[in-house]
Length: 494
Image 1 (cartoon, helix red, strand yellow):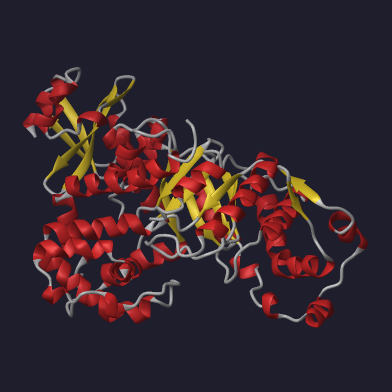
Image 2 (cartoon, rainbow, N blue to C red):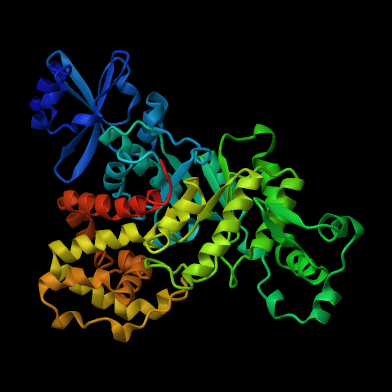
């Protein structure tokens, strides 16, 4: 510890930080309080010295006339850090031209993400998790936010980041996320969207839905024009729209009224209607947007369910020409109502990123999650082939159970037998869609697998390896997520 005392004596000379085990970009000052982060063994710690250091919870170390607090990366210390240094606290970013969500299921990806966003003007959502992901990784929203805050502090990222309570379905979940300081809520309306209506006959629709004069006047007496494109409704289509989305609209209005209206919170509000069995037509998008706006809801983004398939961890599946034609209208509707289009399951949709950049005119929000986990596992395949082989075989055994949580069209017979592959060939599995989806959807089972003595079968080994190979993982993320941004930006003029 005497090395740290030497560093504290020479605090102005932060260029010498590395030789003392200090992260150079983490050195920050608040008046006469100095705070920075160190690496010690397999752990990182906050070090606080000077006036106010005692507010951090940790070990007080005294050496001669110098003292400091060695503080663990706990939630209590994260809250103190966010109070002292506002750049570690999430902010609403969806009003910016471009934003990009990078779900970090492991709490270790932000280092690589920051390298990407130092090169692009899109604002990152560094803390982004769904309740489903939390359940499968045994993490909490506190864990997710704290990991992002500590990472931006350690790596000196001061340009601002968001925190997304993703795919929340209940008022209690929204209240919890906002209470913790999340700067964005994605309201998942899927439980209020009816997927059976598409199969109903005209007679069944008429039996279930009647239209009052007000809604007829709003939609059936004239056409609508958005950026030169015509949108029109007939009576049957209007009834179907009302049956499919009516309760979802009521739900969204209620959540907005209770938690966002009249400046109740300084957070962004996104509506997700993408978790459905059938695509959202441009007419349906217009109907939902118009009804929400009419009832006073101010959206920052909306995520429709696009045509084709946005499966996890693989490129777009579908007719790209049809996608582009509908994307033009979806983007125009979003502009008309003053919000950005949100692209969910945006991981690895390389064939359509340029189109998204083009037709949104560079005003987009794209979400990724599983691809960051896949890059972590690719790092394992590259640096510890034996461990990867064990994980891969376990993933195969759990695939059918994992499919209950995700929609994928994985064909396991297309995946090469890992026993026939050389060590250096394992990383090539991550170029194959079926292998990617296998690893993508089994993350929860992999991280939770236990030995007979209740110790983790893989989790501890994996985290030890990721810490040892943190530079490998950071470089992989920088390249892979960077490719997403590069293609999105290629579609519009900066």
